[in-house]
Length: 398
Image (cartoon, rainbow, N blue to C red; front, top):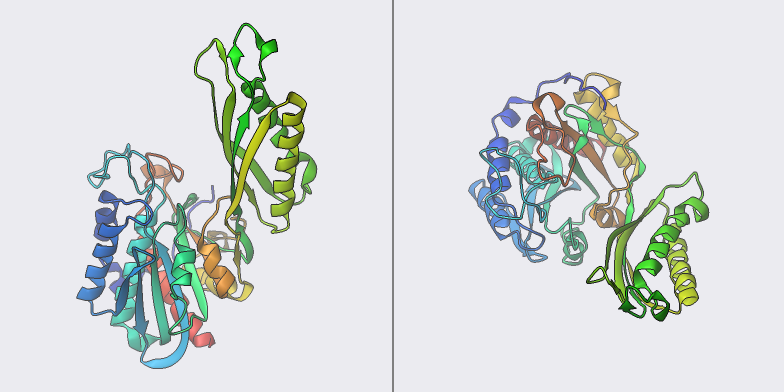
């Protein structure tokens, strides 16, 4: 883990004065799953109304868009924040732990929403400091099934037309006080697959009378691991993971069917068809050799997150202005995790970046999607500072 640097410039006083921590902790206590973020959207809308910020609600079910205009005409920059939580039972004992059983903000989206709210509040108070327009997109359902595409289809990048978009992800793989930013591919495409194997069941003591779906599935799982090892260029990155395998009802019954599901990750778009074809070939070959059949459902969920070089350079430049040492800006921050921010980046130039949020000394370093996930809340003010500086720098460039 990279050691945490200090900041060259203190977070500006008006950002420090924002209630970022209390907003985040309120949101953390009332997490909601994708397209069910009614309480979250209500909280955001109430703050925006209180501050007199124009906004639209009910976009893609629970999404919101706020619009803040500077005193001079200029470009339109969008800032995106996701709002949804995960189906995880929280194990933290903090006072602000989740009050919704089985649902938890275990990926930092409560922080993303608080940062976007803070950015909206600051910009509305300092509209004379920038030209143009800022659209703040509060998006539902990033974790699943994806809220970015429905929001785009609802027209959030139009009226006025967005020139560029930025977003951040609080990142416990980096220490607080660091920023991960790079041009080009940052996060992987996400494909999913489900497969049902149909064999012939029977008595566990008489396997010769059966077509064992468990044995067939075991061979398929092993064979799938050869796709990346033998069909993908070693200089390229890809992952094939089987996350579920269900079969059988008793120890002395040979299962007649089984169910597998998993995910495929890659950066290069051309790998999508190649990997899907190899999965199909493996299923066909193994099932034919056993006299079994299969039913495969394969679909592409999110494309890869690919950052525009110019906007990534703007974010990097802003980050180096804020962080003391060059080691605080981390370019080697690629991950095979996926994000539907990718749909926005397919429509307009933009940059998605990581904001370090881990603090080992305070026990705030559990990974994302862990039931004890939490982050160093000092990252919230830094997130607002970075967003505000990106707005100011983008307007100057244009």
